[in-house]
Image 1 (tube, helix red, strand yellow):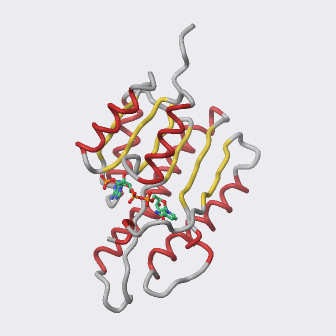
Image 2 (tube, rainbow, N blue to C red):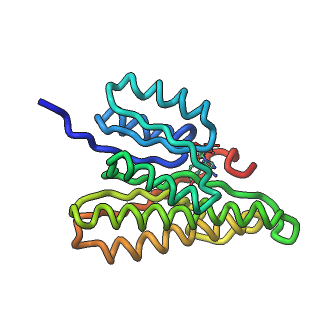
Length: 193
Ligand SMILES: NC(=O)c1ccc[n+]([C@@H]2O[C@H](COP(=O)([O-])OP(=O)(O)OC[C@H]3O[C@@H](n4cnc5c(N)ncnc54)[C@H](OP(=O)(O)O)[C@@H]3O)[C@@H](O)[C@H]2O)c1
């Protein structure tokens, strides 16, 4: 019997939590759309996941750019792919006093942690609502729960992710689409380069 293709789209799938989640989806028979900036790393991870006998589509995009978020989805549509699962995982932070940190870096972080997330989610919903099924997993953080000096922008973005996820979860409760926010504890500082 032909297997129905069920795609999970995972941003930031080449390392850390995104990579581990991608591995779990692969183990459970999902096809994968992997997104990150680095082409070489994407190819390495795509080759690795193909050993699970699934389809893997690596797409290099920079989600600091809202255009890239839109292009990502239009590329999928052009290829007839309608992911059933969206994992908004890619995220970054910056460490330092707000008076000293680089505003351009902070605007990029807000675009990655918030703007791209809401664009991808909107496009996902437009696609999935008519089909009455779909799952969204948003990477919030324990940082969503409280402000934190020297991490003010990161905590602010994660507070947004949690608040907004809870709100749309309620809006979507009778649609067949679920929204889940994951709040990991900080386990490493690669995020704050
Ligand atoms: N690590 C923690 O302790 C922790 C705790 C709580 C919550 N979280 C949240 O969990 C998520 C993952 O964290 P992590 O530590 O696992 O991340 P990570 O190991 O630093 O990996 C980040 C992933 O996102 C991609 N990425 C980064 N910037 C990107 C961009 N501009 N456009 C597209 N892809 C981009 C990276 O690939 P490229 O560099 O090739 O783009 C990589 O695949 C984040 O949202 C983070 O806030 C993490």
